[in-house]
Length: 213
Image (cartoon, rainbow, N blue to C red):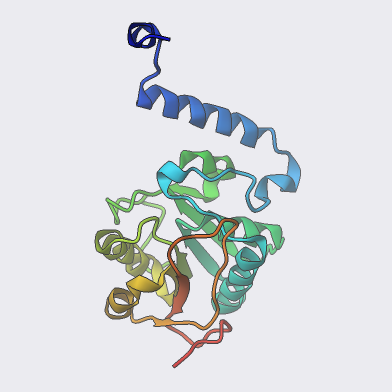
């Protein structure tokens, strides 16, 4: 085919293509019925949004850690960590309150527990989300950058009553420690796909994730 023929071929704009992809993804999600909609990975990763889901084992280990840390009738905020939110809901724990803070509106399928969140506007949250209203915040900033971690940290510190479970790259350790008072755990989270960057967990409390000194 000649260059002129290529030029004549109709092309979708990037915006239109993204909108169509989101529509089809939402259609697939709403087809899920019952508790199956909470299965880890039921919503596919969108690499354009830097989405890389945890393995099922990691998602459930982090969920169990969050439940233990939150305590009885605890409140848990999952900031850019939808795999952990899904695992928490798969645990079928009626005694915990969970919110999912996400930029990806496909997760609005989770109803009132979904809170639209853009790390670029870290404190632009609904009135119903009050300061220091969660026993633990588990956060996975979407990008390995100083800007992203600093802004996400603002959100974390606003939401938490004290406990923080941060999941991010090992390269962010030197920044995460002074920002959030966290230390690296020996537990190494796994993803469904291998990531180029080493990934780690950080906490600011005595955790079951076997923290190093």
